[in-house]
Image 1 (cartoon, rainbow, N blue to C red):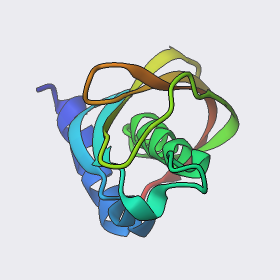
Image 2: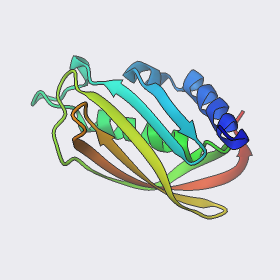
Image 3: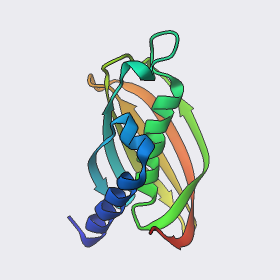
Length: 140
């Protein structure tokens, strides 16, 4: 693990302490590197919509958390500018979802990330693309 990766892990550990929504979702941080995150959660009954599949807001939130952890991993407050999401496969109760966020491009102020969410069968269930804006403010 590089020094940058060690710092990234400390940043995300701090974010998780303060992120009550990710805690409520049951997010587990699996891996953090600068510009990268891998997190996991299990879909619970209260996360389903009227059709018995995952509410889109839940899978969006999981992808958004992975996005936030990856793009804030350098310790600067970074916020979403634009995101898009696709739901190629339905998610059901008790599915184990793993979200992996990868930095595709980075400038001084912006970053582009792709986030894939896969179920326990390694099937792609969500594809999320996010553009972020990096401020000069340090995460506290």
